[in-house]
Image 1 (tube, rainbow, N blue to C red):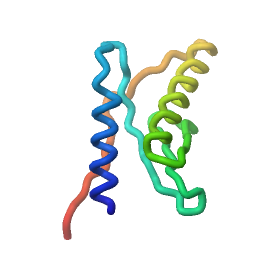
Image 2 (cartoon, rainbow, N blue to C red; image 1 turned 180 degrees about the vertical axis):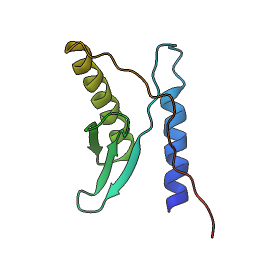
Image 3 (cartoon, rainbow, N blue to C red; image 1 turned 135 degrees about the vertical axis):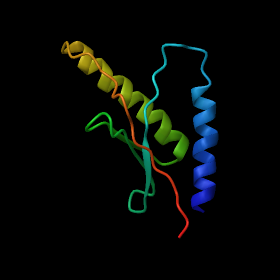
Length: 96
C-alpha cells in the first residue's frame, strides 16, 4: 500500500510540476494519511505553519498549493521576502 501511495504521489507530482513557467517554485511537502479525518494532511516543513488537507491526495495537493501561495502572499504583504533555503532534506527508504 505504501508503494502504491508513493507511486501515486510521484505521478501526481509529475502532472503538477510539468508547468512551462520558469518562475514556478518547488517545495517539499509531507503527506500523511489521517485515519480520523479519513484523508491526507499536507505540510511544508520549509514554511512553518503551512498546512492543509484533503479527502483525496489530489485534493490535498491542490489545497497545499493554495496554502503555499497564501503563505507567500502574506510574507510579501508584510515586506518579508521569501528566501529559499540553500539545502533541503528529503525522506528516503532503506531496507533492513
